[in-house]
Image 1 (cartoon, one colour):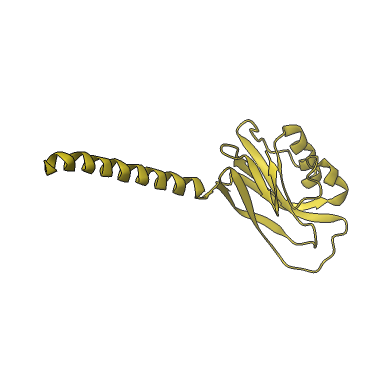
Image 2 (tube, one colour; image 1 turned 60 degrees about the vertical axis):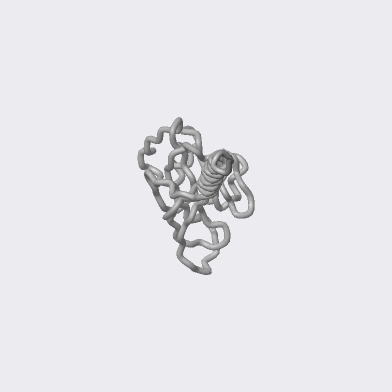
Length: 160
């Protein structure tokens, strides 16, 4: 009689163990962050008088994004005057930017991570005490849109 009760109990324990392993793997995957490849990037100076060309609501932010070819073209004209605007497929990609807001420092985006649909932009910049007068340093990077729901910008998130 003991063996007849043992097999169903064993099957229940095996099913329980499989469910626990599945939930643990799912929870671990959902919380993991991964690096997003940078497809193209640029760094340079951006005139303060043209900050209004950045997307609405992002002109004063250190971090932001561009999802429209027309906005990118006007930003590029101020960023790299005289250079042809690079082609970006905005149906599959978006452009993120990082710029100075306190002091003028050279800046470059070196890593972008995605966790739970939120990207975080990691940029490195030189340190100086030069006041921002007529220009800021800015970096732009093209990344794939897939999986991106919002961007971490300091202590707030900007929705894509």
